[in-house]
Amino acid sequence: MWLTLLITIIAAHSFITADVTEVRVPVQLDNRGWCKYRDVTLRPNEPATYEWPCERLTCRGTKGDYSGDMMIAGCPPPADAVAGTRPDKWPGCCNRTHFRIGETPS
Image (cartoon, rainbow, N blue to C red; front, side, top):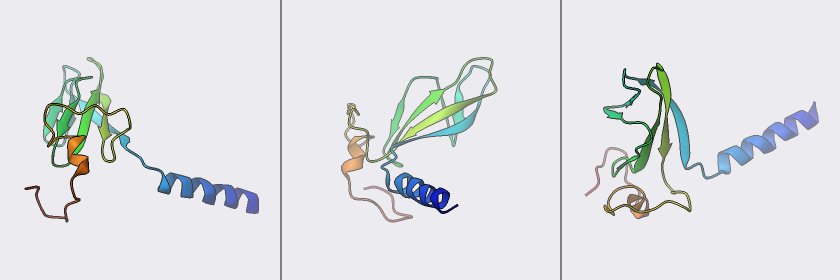
């Protein structure tokens, strides 16, 4: 029992302290297989980058399916992240000072 508890604590600590830069969120797909997430609808496999929140969204969906995944990359960006033409959007915005809740970027 103690060994199981120790392994659980070590695993939880590793998970909490790890730099998670991309998460998968299940989403509903429209009839074209595009992901619907928050107030946007994205084509599969065409990443979209944003300034606020500073993130990259990538839809993983297939036409004919009812659900897919939205891959969300945040900050810090992965080491292989390529900057786009807009330095104010992800991953460029990761270098900015963090904003307080309720503030908008200037």
